[in-house]
Length: 618
Image (cartoon, rainbow, N blue to C red; front, top):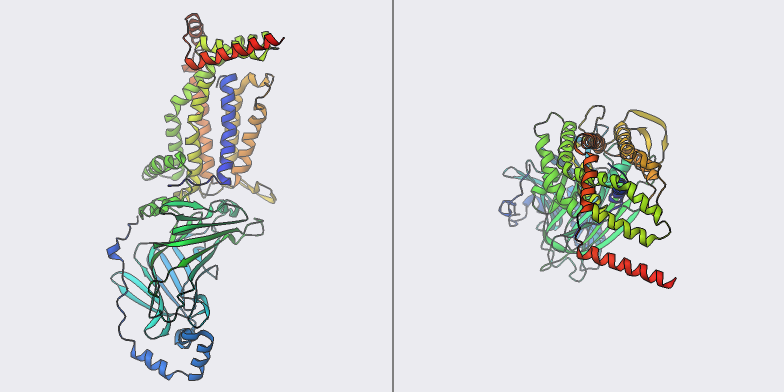
């Protein structure tokens, strides 16, 4: 499976986490611190065409000859479809199951409304993925008499039937009672996924064999969430190609891409998704994503506009494609249960970050939320467990910090003694570390080990469908921002509201930094090192601004995590680590002969040679 690219949202997360980790690494050196997949055999297959309906034939024969002639001059063989009652009525057909309500338009034969029944928008309006012309599905084809036609402009004849518990909607674009292009939809109980087939009968002498049939699918994503800018960050076009690889278009104003061997295309709208899947991969695919939110105060209806162009291959002069439509939640469990690689639509992070989410945090959070009284409490409990699991790593980091603190007076002496000789200063410092059995890197590694966990959680909370519209304390929706005050104006990058959880998280991380920094922040900034005082103030400020429009569940996690970290630090500092014992141990280590490793010995030899060459030049 090809790893996904690092998008701007992930980059921002890395900057936030990276700023905190840079500070931590520096301080280590300077201070102490429910749906099942449908088996193939259950797919409803269109029965062989029987004799044409007698009433239809009679209607055709009795049609006004002038109207037929006019339609045929304009549409050729497909002029017949324009003479049928379905064209004159311009009607619709509506079907539903317990999850979806779908409306099909005679003109174009495609779905003109797709309503997800059991969910509402942030302002209590039913969730529509398709409505009022925001989507189109079109086949563009050529005929043997030189015409170029589009199915979106032609009229299909609808029929609805039952196949067991399944509802079958057949939309036929006819050139005669028994020759047609058919869209066949099969809606099943309890499913967001429906079967969809495109097939033709008797059109091998009508369709041009030299010109390709092109499928065009377009959709403009409706806003469903409180913050359109936040929702837009997680709205993207995802596609699978090459037999299992997946990719997505970026978050720019306009992104385009082209790939081969396409097996599905998904228009993901943060918490809801429209997906077209095919059993016979499309030979190529061209994709376009356009950002429709240039100003979040003005552009409040749509998030992004998506478009896909896919070729359909004629076999024996006919079309025959078995596909599926999915209209439903962007829920990892639902998508993963189809076993068609749809879980890759979820932005859980690339590489190890995604694995941690899939195999640790998603199942663990599902387990906690299955018996705890609220999702907010589940977040708190999961945060506590994560911090406890990472506590040995935290202990090693603090132990390294304590050792470095004990050595600080001797390091300062070396710095003063060899202040004019950087090479000698480095040599003596390395000797001191080697004799004392301490190393700055021993504190760096534990901090780096926590990065995959921190970043995985940063990706997990915005993607957790379970949190959508679930309240906790003053937050009415853990998947969106909490609000304690409305501002009469809009602040760039901050918004028109004040969220409390980001404020609490920022205060907690600032207190933690102040506690671990202590008096060492007053020391002179070492040349070449990052300005840690600047980072100490910048990190909480970035969190305050950036997370004001983020999911309150994520801010809750960071708030609780920082509180627990402060508590662990105080316990380790006051009850576990004894600096006097550490000092005595270091002094004992310094008296023992220390056997150098090959790498350390080689480094020391190189430094000594460099020092001798420097003296020789003088």
